[in-house]
Image 1 (tube, rainbow, N blue to C red):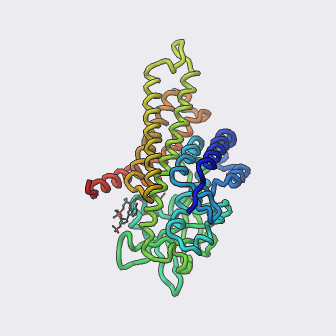
Image 2 (cartoon, helix red, strand yellow):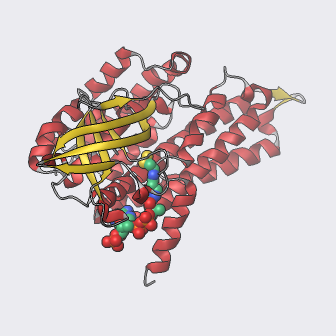
Image 3 (spheres, protein in one colour):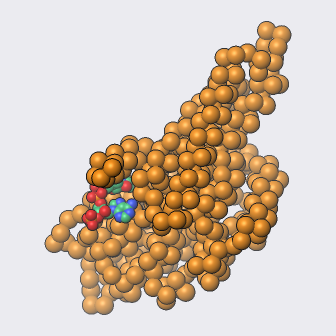
Length: 384
Ligand code: COS
């Protein structure tokens, strides 16, 4: 895959930085109030190529490396997460499986449309009874001639309401249990028998949508299996999540930066006991701890992304990055509210909204506890 050179990437960074500051940040409250991303912004995102950031150029995308993607995610993290979420599945979990393991024909069929944003891709792994343990999923794909019939329910599926394409993990082998019994299917959203549940009501991240996706004997040809080989779906999903976890770590790191700016600016302006509260050492301690954790998260994101680019995987450090950065942003959001005092509990201040928004980072694409398991297991089984 060809990648863009550093000069062109620098221009892209400048464009995204300006877009975030001038177009996204001023629209945060509107998104919070309407629970929608304005159509004009969606069009602008398409024009900027944001839907195709990580899709290879040969399929119409920009083909960012993991390191470049992480830098852009850190910029996008500086505003409401709902904006990034709109194209996040196209540049991440919704399309990554296709990029990693799809046949040429499968890639040609979907990637160019995903790159422009004409089609939104969604990743359907989680189920009502299968979240942290996806190997136990029960959605089944039963062979019928050259076809498969898919039945089951997927839960909390990001962008399902907008999706044109679902990457669906389903059980294809009923003789064995666990990882090798699962296959990844490409299922068009208009396939007969595929319906959506009602939109979920969430704690935060208003403007993003999740809902159930219900499959009732949805017929797909066997050519819909990513890479055409059954039984590879679990491992593919795990590989998809490796890069996804670096991306979420970067996003959380971007939000650390924004929260610190909000904290510092409020502390400078707010006066108590005759002084700006920024002069008080207990406030300074919260700012210093936040900055230290932010820079540590940023270094970890950059090192892990570089490792991913050099080796093609980073299972251990992807988990360490997601774990550290998302826990850090949780602590920083909490301090940002604390520095704001009573104002931090009021919806007119951004930190109140971000406090709710960032809570999801420690849960989706693998909870903090799952990251701890991955980290410990990798170390225990390694020779070092
Ligand atoms: N890359 C490549 N292969 C991987 C992998 C990865 N990151 N992670 C696991 N595998 C492989 C393993 O090597 C193993 O293959 P072999 O049988 O050939 O050795 C196979 O997949 C099964 O792995 P394992 O035994 O570790 O699977 P477990 O069922 O124990 O699950 C965890 C491991 C808990 C780490 C996994 O289920 C997980 O990440 N859960 C969280 C899921 C998640 O993030 N959900 C969020 C929803 S998506 S928004």
